[in-house]
Length: 119
Image 1 (cartoon, rainbow, N blue to C red):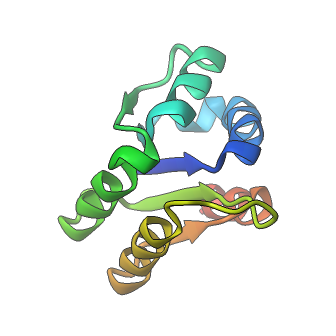
Image 2 (cartoon, helix red, strand yellow):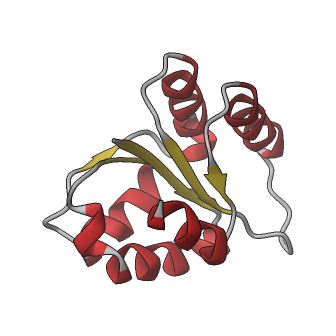
């Protein structure tokens, strides 16, 4: 299975911690991560199969969206920071729209990410 991961700046550390907590399960999958999120997660879990894409604002969100549209992602984990403004909010909405359109399960926080990974 291929999983896409991305996190807003205020949630990147939470993503790295979540991936670390689930490293045993995640070593069985391919992870595609936007730039900064991928760098933090790779530093925390260097043995995982992580492909870093571009930074979200520089096109990483669209790269994940393209993978969804092409049937290459089975799950999206996107830790959203609901309390901060995001200059590329339109890109975020487009990514979540594609996940919804193509029926790809996605989680926006640790509780739903835990549930998806348990399946």
